[in-house]
Image (cartoon, rainbow, N blue to C red; front, side):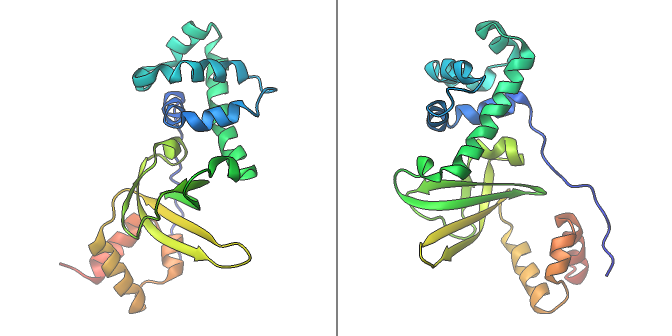
Length: 211
């Protein structure tokens, strides 16, 4: 079967969106500040932490206000905010133990359309399949902060680990049911799911199982 080529649906965040993500994870920002003394943004990051990212007003903080309050050009402010965000992900990958303090250590993988990212974190309990997960910090990476659990994988080896795979949006259990049914009947294969968009799969499902 030949598949249509389609442009990847990848999220491109605004600076304000990234700022809101950072304000939702101030503890992680503190972790980064302790190992980023040599970074150009260090003084700016410390300044934001001291002000708790302006607290409850964080969603209304603009680049214009940050530029005025910190007295630096908007270009630098935008660059530093993006670098801080990306460096948290890099630090999480290099030193996951810094982000896994209390609770069960897990690796979380977030997917929304063609955007994808991952983080090593701690949770108090492992969410079950189809449960809702709200994770504001990754919104700038994948375009949403609302997910549902698609799969939980327990990996047994020299070190036991847990992987939680989540997808953007809310689960449609009926869609999941008929997709499983179509796969079982051989009418849709894993290659179809891999190469076709969710919209294309939905169109095929509606033709296979018309109401």
